[in-house]
Amino acid sequence: MSNSLKFVLGAVIGGLFGSTLAILLAPTTGKQLRGRLTEMALELKNEVSSAAEERRLQMEQELNTLRKA
Image (cartoon, rainbow, N blue to C red; front, side):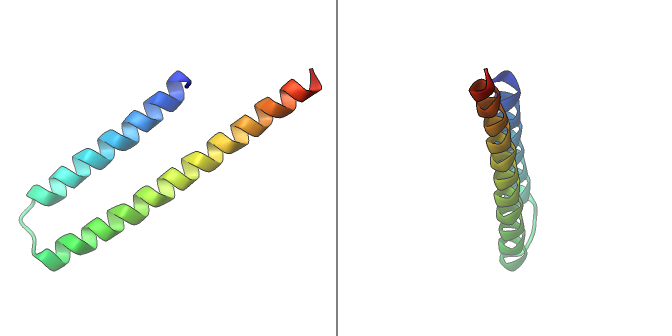
C-alpha cells in the first residue's frame, strides 16, 4: 500500500471519527442528530466511492503500462 493511499485512508478515518465525536457530544435533539448522521453517512459513502474509483483508474493505468512493457 503506497504512502499516499495510507495517508488518505488515515485522513478519512480520522475525519469520520472526529466528526462523529463532535456530533455526538454537541447538544442537539435526537431528530437533528439522526439527520446529521445520515448526512455524514452519505458524504462518507460518496468519498469512499470516489477514492475507490480514483484508485481503480490508477491501477488500470499501471496495468496498461505493465502490459506495454
